[in-house]
Length: 210
Image: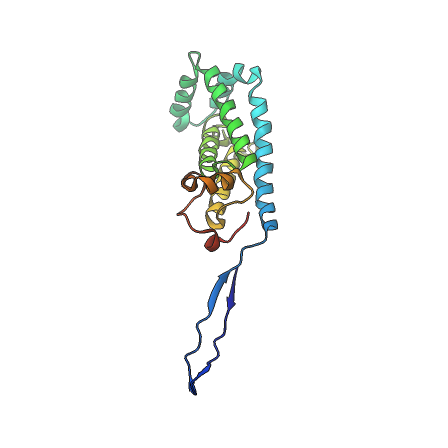
């Protein structure tokens, strides 16, 4: 928010009219309370990911990982069969448990990073890519689509879009004071490359507390 301070009325100097004074611009930072809504949404998203991650650590998830991928490949259109054959082949030969553990670790990272506001730009990019991969594998692109039976396109793609929304929002709003990133950036300015989308700028010009 900008407030114009100054005057544009001409003044008199030595009996002559002086040129109108140029207005000066002062950037007024939003109050700290403006940080609450965005941080709250990010933290709630982190709570959802914490629940997802907790469920992934149960042994049953690893035991049924390959079966889940095999089941979702059934009934897919012929154009997608090579893709799902590749997916099931990658998870075969004892690799399913390793992939399931990797999924649990990655989701735990997303939960912790969202809750703390750590490496937000990188976290949002990882989250968007990971959920898009889930949508294309475990969720079978939301299909197979059967008229009158299929009712949605899958949940993971919604997560992908939500990560993208957080990424774009942060690019326009600037550094978040209610995050671990803000603490790190004060000591290591180069951390902005990991935490923020866009070129670095001064806190005055960004002027946003989120």
